[in-house]
Image (cartoon, rainbow, N blue to C red; front, top):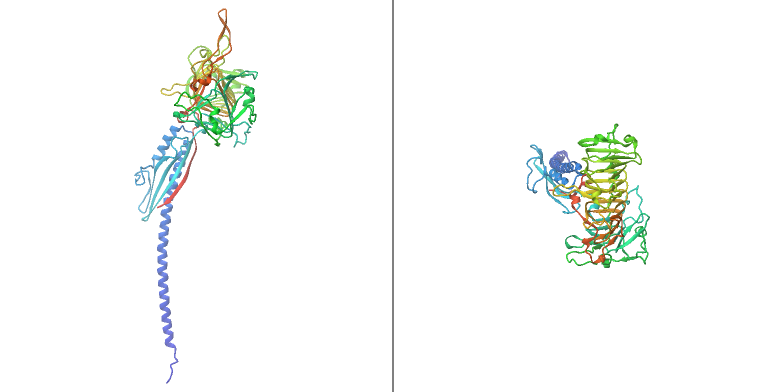
Length: 599
């Protein structure tokens, strides 16, 4: 039998098989390619719609950051009103509500972008922290594909300065200041005698209490006056908070002089200073307990808060301006509330050491440039209504400023009827010392002082504004001393204000009688007080007063209520809510993202 050996037919079969294989592979590749194109198109749409939704969130964030920048420095009430107005542009009641107007950023056939804001609330209502949480909502549609991004943000803002949340505070202002040198006694506080404080206290280092007030003399002499230990009262019958960074002491001897005591920084003399441990905190304060509805001993806490110093020098630019021409003093007189005036002291009065303003002045702004050792003095020397010194948008005093003058014999410097009367309205920057002597002043002002501040033989009040009374706030780089005010009076001189010093703060309520409704904060605080009535009996000769006997202080002062203290300091939160013109108000304004999710 003959075998077949011709393979020509096999070649045809192989070719047909290869054609089939390549056709199938080609169709498969084509199908894969078409599917890839479809998937790429889907991915591109997904990316486009996601990017568009992201742009909606970015738009709202940028809108809030841009629109809220001008709010820094506003009073708290104005800040809240303006903030509400800004958010309202895109605000809706809830997630399901559609904003009908401004929220439609893009409205085209194949592309839409809608944004809205909702769920706005304060993180910690009723505190100095004004940070608000809110939800930003962005919904984008591209070629029928929809994406939603929801972002929760915090819009941070704080009421300033932080120091205003305490009735009394002492701290080191130099922690983060390259040009400021710390001292060993920074943050110490001394409460001598029956000082009565209502509100929380902050003491960065050591607190020393003593059951005597003190009278000091010009030759560094002193007399300890028997009184009572201080009291610290909380609100509504609760205990106040006392924050002490290091230790609490009680001074148990009169052997140390006043200056020796307040200049201590170690308190290691066991014969003088008794360390009070937290469990025995009551030993450092008054034992008076006849009022069952009040607590006069605080809760002791031990922690340190990092307060930001108030940048007093930085405020100068808000008030100082100059001009090639000086304004004559005669042109300052009267009501010219739209006028800005520049006074060059070296060209006034032949460059005398004192420039005297004794007539009412009402201007928009005033800038006074004084030469070295020159002083601007406000005087009201003849009986007449208040001398008005009103500067709508502030004043700069480039040197020392004095207000009034201590009455001279035969006038009694302790009698307010002998004081010169003033009304000062508007913020001031004093590039020198501030001295208020023999003056009855009504203030509505924040005053920044680069030098020392002294208030003696004076009466300080607010300006009556109908249902409220205005206030005085002083921020001083130098020491502040308030003494010999409202002497021997049974009713206190109520000062609605706040005092801040980057050096020593000394306030006397021994024979003086003061009530500060606001607070005080400084580098080192020394408060001196007694309780009850203080008398001084005159010495007569032929019917004339020729002198006075020694002061007579109330006996058994520990039995007297803290309400009878001659130096009361009561925390007033209204200073934060309704501060005087010129007070720094809103700070740390920033938008931060807390959470972002895509639907």
